[in-house]
Image (cartoon, rainbow, N blue to C red; front, side):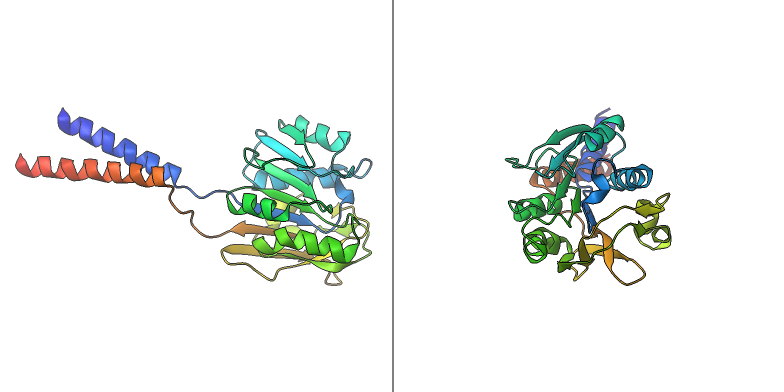
Length: 255
């Protein structure tokens, strides 16, 4: 009886420790321009792109999404209602005290951006959909304050606007590693000039830039590739499980 209890306790502790040590999603999607979520422009292709991104984040119709912006191209009734129709709780706040507790953050580049806080959120396990081309401060300034966040995940905005309109994205779904997840069913995405995206890289992140035929980086994705460090509580739980199995082995040898 004691042996059986020891086995159960050890297996439970070990299983909980392994589950608590699983890697976070830590995924980022970037758009060169803001118009895709604006009233009158957020149509079936743009909706599918956003829906694909949420699925890639590991969200399936549940969770709390923060709209971190003061820009009406992101914080508007049409976009909020769409997210609500998918089952998400939506919070709009241009100056949140913390990003903690949100399943994903949608943000557009604005001059009061907390880039370091957004980077810490992504590095700590958060999902971010980041959008440029807003015009706040001009192209060079927009790139500078956006890159505080983007550089942390291996991406970067150019300090000039590309002048591009609607982008044909039909071929992006065949481009690995992230294209099938993000662009399946997306024929085009509306835009009206944005910041080109490049991928200088960052330790521990896999990045991908999607470019138009002229080589402009219009969309990008990044995902963490390192294993999460065990939290102290998880480490203690793992030790408890292993200790239970050691005691069981000793009991067997005595028997």
